[in-house]
Length: 262
Ligand SMILES: Nc1ncnc2c1ncn2[C@@H]1O[C@H](COP(=O)(O)OP(=O)(O)OP(=O)(O)O)[C@@H](O)[C@H]1O
Ligand SMILES: Cc1ncc(COP(=O)(O)O)c(N)n1
Image 1 (cartoon, rainbow, N blue to C red):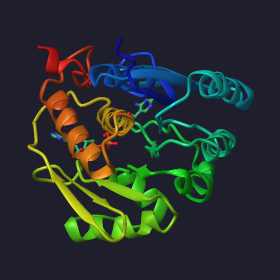
Image 2: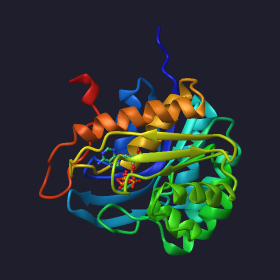
Image 3: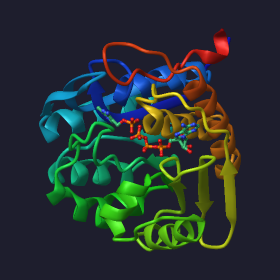
Image 4: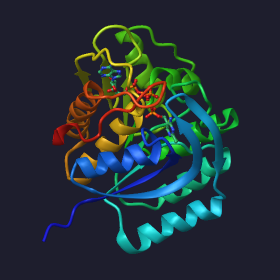
């Protein structure tokens, strides 16, 4: 009997199914793991943007987390939209007691420019959440908000990695997808440097790329890969999913989580 590795996402729901909890669970299934969820917030969201967002009480987040960890157990955790300072602090406290790798995607603003994290929560992300991370996966906008470093080239990505590592994650993965040219990501622990270069797909249907990459890293860590191997495998998965992204609704469609299944 196959018992798949167990992976937990702590994130917000995207009603449109392209990002957030829905992207995370699809990615975890596609990579052969058992996905579980702690919902932090519910968004009304589609291909055009976020029409509404409601966060859950901290007690509901704690209860979901305890139900999973105290009975089923987890082999890796991924965090996404955490909405408020109180939820960031709640999740950071819960993660401190977990003996499994943690991937922190410090989600700030959606692709359409809607805030998914209150500006007042940035300090808690820096001081409480980042220190719990095995890998933190900011995009360049999140790097700028969290550290003040404005990246325009690959040297800037090195500076960004140092600035993120100063808050205490074991590894920083700086996502350069928003720079022109081939999408390149830098993984660093302050000693080793790994550059991951993918092919750019000129596909506007890229809703959910960040969530998908972070969840894929968590899934591969749960399967026993080390961090550089997990990031390499996750980058290959998200690149394929972006290449197969498809139109839905009138705006930006989702990446295809099932691309490997044809
Ligand atoms: N057009 C593209 N073609 C191929 N890979 C891409 C493209 N855009 C981004 N990527 C890759 O996708 C992954 C996610 O990066 P990205 O910078 O898009 O994250 P993100 O900004 O958190 O996501 P989002 O923009 O959805 O919030 C990275 O590995 C990045 O290099
Ligand atoms: C609930 C929720 N969480 C996260 C994102 C960011 O998505 P992406 O993966 O595109 O960075 C989103 N749009 N909605």
